[in-house]
Each structure stands twice: as structure tokens, then as C-alpha cells.
Image (cartoon, rainbow, N blue to C red; front, side, top):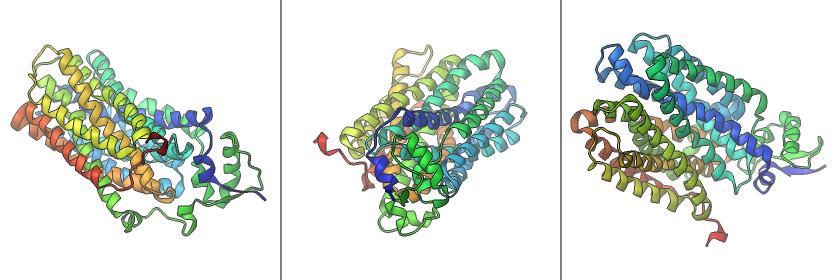
Length: 444
């Protein structure tokens, strides 16, 4: 009877077209996650005008979404480890689609906040499971790129949200944006439920699901028979983990957990100061909706290019040098923006600086998912990634207030200085992490 170590077989296996299709499926879910997450930041100026409200009431509404994501990120990661990454991912997509669609019916900040909190539960649960699935579908060599390619879809979705807002909002109103943001993920969730398989390593540690694993491995190009015996991944061989958060603070993982959590906190703080308040800041400075949304799109789209480039560099230089280098350049770029004039018309130089700074901030954020997936063994990977992201979501909550405070007290220069300060802390936190993705031996 043949014995197969699933983790080793996949780590050293080929990078097939089917695996690329599976990564694309997880990426599609995260595109919609990123889009729905940023719809509200684009429409706040319109809501302030329609409901005759100042900026202050919307700070709490903006904070309720990531507050839900804190709970959703932790619960989604634990559920992924217990009931399966695929099931948890599809459930998360449904969980943010329905409340997003419901926002199209609201007429005040109270129900807006309630539905944003509920959507946040699903938005938070989708990301750790998408990262875990992408990491476990592919060989070790392609893992950082696959995970980053999945998570980079967050700013890609944000780019779509900004582009939709610039075109749809002036013509059809803000409610149409949330109708689109609700219906699209509902359709995608149905497709993913049909097409995505479960994580091979998750199936391997559950003997009753080995027939399902045989079918999947054959589709991945592996020669296995129904009589094959599968070796449980080494990390889970001694104990079948139940995804306990306590395991993340075992002596061997404690320092990495603290460093990753701090890095996620301050990087999400920096990113969501931008996502939440760039449009309102620019419209307040006299720019038109389409120009303000274009600046936010540039901020996001720069992140797509930056994250893909960062993932490629990680494969040659490892993650320590790459992420710390990008964090340092982000500090310098944000400080440079504090000295730039902010007045219409929108200049190419200003758009370029939003793209550069957004590229660096988003690139650090998205590539950290690959680092987190590398740090934690498969039996607690969903819990590890989910917990780091959940702690980071506290920074997301705080960003709603920090961005508004900076604009009220110091205007655009204070806004950009907050980016610089947050990324300086990210640099220090990444230095604390010991288990960075190593530099390949052939790159020396």
C-alpha cells in the first residue's frame, strides 16, 4: 500500500494550470472583498450632503466595519481550521454580500453602521481562508507569489470601487454602488461553492475525507490510488490541532506572533487612513468627485503593482530585506507628501505620489500575508493568519478616528505624517519577526 506525505508531494510538485485556476478563484473572492470594503469611503461626501451631516458621525460608522472584521478574522480563521478553508471562504463571501446589498436601503447612520458591522464579519473571515487556501494549493517555491497574488486583490478591488464610484455615483446615486457590491459577490459565492476544492492538507488530517483527497490529487497531477495511505503533515502528527489561539503564543512562535500582529496593526492603520479619508480630504480641498476617486484608485492600483513586484523580489531576496526596505521607502514617500500643495486642478505629480505611496503601503500589507502563512504550520495556519489580521483590524478601527483627527487638527500635512509614523513602527515590528521567508540558496 502506497504512503503519501501530502505536504511534501505538493511542496515539490509542479505548478499546473489547474492550480493557477484555483488561486484565481480565491483571488476573485478577495477582489470583491476589497471592493465592498472600500465602497463607503467613496460615498461619505455624498452622504454628508444628502443627510446634512458633518464628518464626525461617519467616523464611528467607518470604525464599525473593521470592528466586525476583527471578530470575523478570528472566527473565520478558527472555522477554516475546523470545518475547512473552502467552506469558511464561501460562507464569508455570502456574509459580506447580503449586508452590503442591504445598505442600499438605509436612510441614516444607525442602520448604515449596523449593516457595515455585519458586512465586516464576512469581510474579515474571507482573507485568512483565502490566504491559507492559496498557500496550500501550490508548491513551496510559488507559495509567496500565490498568496500575495491572492491578497493583492484587496487593493485591486479597492481600485474597482473607486472607478465605479467615479462613474456610477454622479449618474445613478450612491445606492446603486451597494446594489452592485452586493449582487456580484452573491454570484461569485455560488460559483466558488461549485468549483473550489478543499485544501489538500486539511483533507489529509481527516481520514474520512481521503476519497475526496484522492480525486483532488489526481487533478493536481499526482499518481495516487484509492488504497493510498496519507501521512498527516508533520506539524499535526503529534496532535490534531483545534486551531487554538493559545498555540500561537507557544515559546517557539511567541516573538513572531507579536511582531506580525504589531506590523499588521500599524500597516492597516496607515492603509485605512487612506482608504477611508482620501476622497473626503480631496473633495474638502475643492477637487471634484471623479478626481478624488481617481486619486484613491491610483493609491490602490499602485498597491497592485507594488505587491506583485514585492512578491517577486521576496522569491529572490527573502521577506526580511524586501518588506523592511519597502517600509523605509514608504516613510520617506509619506514625508515628501507633507510638503506638497493640495489644491485643484489634480496634477500628474500628485496622482503619481498617491500611486507610489499607496503602492508601498499596500505592498507591505499584502506580502505580510505570505510571511504569516510561512510562519505558522498548516494545522494552525488559518488561526495564525486570522489572528494577526484580527489584531491588525484594531488598527483599521483606529484609522477612522486618526484620519479624521489629523484632517481636523493639521490638514493634509498631518494626514500624510500619520502615514509616515505608522510605517516607521511597521519597520521595527518586521525586524522583530524571526521566521521570515528565507532567501533561496541559488540567489546568493
